[in-house]
Length: 248
Image (spheres, rainbow, N blue to C red):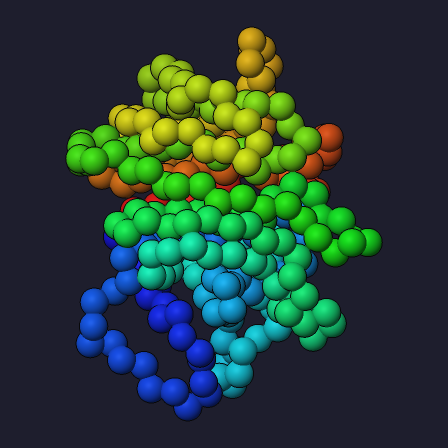
């Protein structure tokens, strides 16, 4: 597992980090899936975990935009324990205002994901959030890929993910129906290129689609649903979409 290691200590400008010790035992990945949410930096309690550095070496004000993943999609290593995770505005206007927060207790040796989710309230300047465990299988079979589905769309009913092999035409369910703020189990799929779709329980109509997604053997992926389910445009950034992020 590739990690973006972060020491949860005060980040002094000229502080010297000790990189000789072992990495903290818990890992977490950060997603800004809030519809129309501002760009944010992510925090664990009072410690900043993600930020973007400009070419001048000064922290950029861009942060992680809506639809983005922090730290280039890598996990951050943190000490096990109880945390309040938050996304704080990275821009100069409303700098460090908390947009969204969620609490969770991280166990040693386990991985997690924090999602800013739902639809951003521009008046209250808030969005929803949740944390889920990334419960990998105990023993990986390196001849297959592992895929799970996470639902971060607040105005969608529980959905089930399906993957259709573009070569054989065989379609497989990727776990069962997943409600908002939840994630399914990691399911083994043959190494192939797939067309993905989600459907409501008992329906044969696709709600969200994404074509030509490659799943490589020996790797683990999360397909995350984000956006506003009422948007029917095929081009608007707020439309419902399926994000593909590798876990390992």
